[in-house]
Length: 575
Image 1 (tube, rainbow, N blue to C red):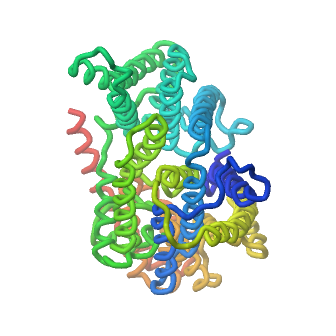
Image 2: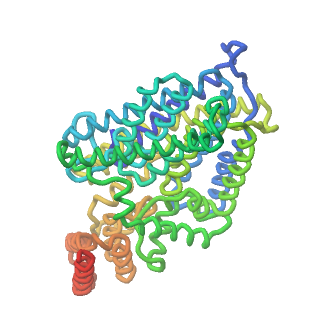
Image 3: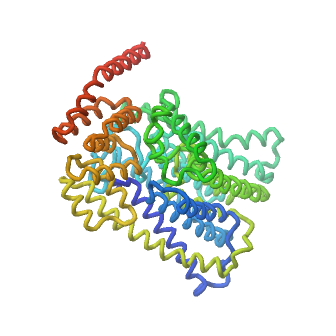
């Protein structure tokens, strides 16, 4: 289920629970393990990356004013969990059957996701067990059991890598393997992900390189023929993607009528990529404003709100949609250096070993996720971050000399109980937030919520109240603080509208009008609707806002002029 306010919560909860079970098994393993199983070991050197980021987040908490403590605390928990999972991967790296089991798991999971896509395409919206999923009459992008279509596309690419590994090991027959490849490619096409074709060719190139490095497989061929056979796999996968795209488009237009028109190719050709460019520009400017320690983890949304007057229109977002810019903006050169230097050293160590089927599969998982992270932020989600941390540990070859084997094992044992407690607390928090967001009478529900608020996810409760409860003259200072806290979570139009009214109730009309200008820059295409909501909320607040309402009404001629200009521009484009 995908529920408000966190559509990915139950996916991340499942991922966190599964990896916590892995860690629990490793901690208990020495008490009943046979000598053939891996015993406790050192941390791998790649553990320095999540551990270094964890220490940096602690430093930020001590030195900076953190506008969104919840995001900081969640990032600390995820960094600690990633550190433990690099240890788990390093310890289990030589376990027989590990890679085959992982390949079977991601392949089976990808098939389940494709099956759910089919069900999702034909079920009505908000059907039983599908509460909160999209209505296909409004959108054609299927996301199955993940919260976003792009996330599903990357997971299906993982499944594709699993199929190629199983084909390489001859676990799957060729006919079965290529049938699975076509099914997963079809699932990718209907997500309309722009990065999916690149990811498909990437894993084809990795497994093609694997064939190139096996002379026995290509024995009897000339050098040129060997090169062509090595290139055959990425070309074949690319052609399958194109053929599947055209076939599904034809079927949808003639038989299915599911409004599946649209793909990553069409979105690249006709979609506006300026939104990403604006986010990247904000990330870069945020880095320049705080180059050493960064602006603080989780501060990107509020930094957008504060600087939109100077930097221009942008989409409200929690991230710069690029892992490198995110690190620069929110953790500065220190965090960026920890990540880049650590990954560079890990890459050098990885290149010292010959490419095998096992390493090809794991590298495909990492490479496709990193490619996705250059355009979005999949590593903010447990179901991508934790497996990648495990894989980094599994592919590392050098241990840290400190801490000792016993200390490393004890540290993971000490970190596991707080992580399990975090899972339980966040589950309880989510139940409270679901009730709050779905309440028919939000003011009454929020009053009950405040008696026993969420612990870890409380800012989302504040956000619900700030966005959904009208502002009036009762306790204006408290209501203003409520809106300000919600802006740190995400400056949406509802929150900014109520914030402007709260400022006006305190007689701060200039600040309120500045907020209206910022609202216009965040959502210029929806400003007419937001302006109407703002007027309605201002009238609803009572007669104290007569002067402020007059200033708002003075904006109407300018708003009508800009709307007509946009319409004329659209007509010219149509011509």
